Amino acid sequence: MKRTPGKLAPAFTVSQQYVGLSAARPVRAQLGDKADAVAPHDHTFYEISVIHEGAATHQTELFEAPVRHGSVLVIPPGKVHAIVDGAKLRGTNVYYLTESLLSGLGQLWEQESLVSLFLADSLFPRSDHAKPFQFDLSAREYEAARIDLEDMRQEWNASKPSVLYMETCFLKLLILLSRSYARQSPQEIGFRFGRPIWLAIKSIEATMLRSQSLSVAQIARELNLSAHHFTRLFREATGWTPTEYFQMRRVHHACKMLLNPDCNISDVAHRLGYSDAAHLSRMFNRYRGMSPREYRRMYVSKPEPPHNPS
Image 1 (cartoon, rainbow, N blue to C red):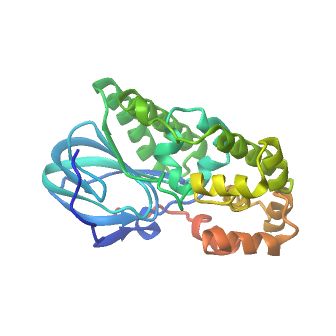
Image 2 (image 1 turned 60 degrees about the vertical axis):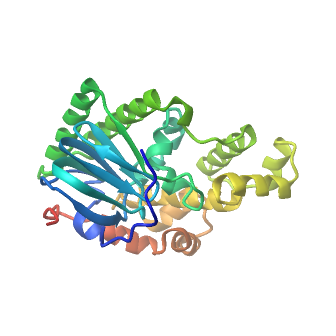
């Protein structure tokens, strides 16, 4: 790989209007048309591309590299990339609601590089942890990935898709891809957090799952640090203060619960330890830029998948 000169300006954005994710279809595997080039663009969701045929050059603001059969591209939301100098390049693009994964974050941390590759932007958007990745699959890995991609694509088109089936196929794919990346880049696996930060993240997660209030002073005492020093270290490592990270994780869980149309917003607030629905709405708007009701309208009750973007 080599550095690219300057920044890339997006000519368009792949958004919900084109992707059409929903509570019934939280992950989409979309087979693309053959193309010689794709103009610089960004996305409102993560994009994972698995290349099936052809050859081209992949450009991001961090690197420029050749792509071919078996190449995998991982692009976080808001990052710009482009395909140039291509020859009938074709692949499958995968888009997904990170909310469908983040409620089970504890187990995902245990998978080599999975969170770093596919969830960093949702957890640490203020840091430099979220970045584009590119790597190549072995022949065996590619064949396993191809099967999962096709199963997800077929399920998306079913009249009554199984969310469990789609998410199971998707998790299989993510584990396969993260293992492949870890095999090729063992020095770049995971986040480079020190022990105090890891312990703090686990403590914050446990506090949230118990629907308790966060005590930054208590976590700092457990780490033998002052509250001020602990907060500074946590912000430097993650881009968030401990309190901000805690609030964001509660909103992640609220998103997952709101995808269930039978879950009352007041019940969501109560189960997550908010004082009331208004408190949930204020925090939700702060971290998602919309109200819980707006979020639910965006992703719930979408009976038909959209047409493929042209």
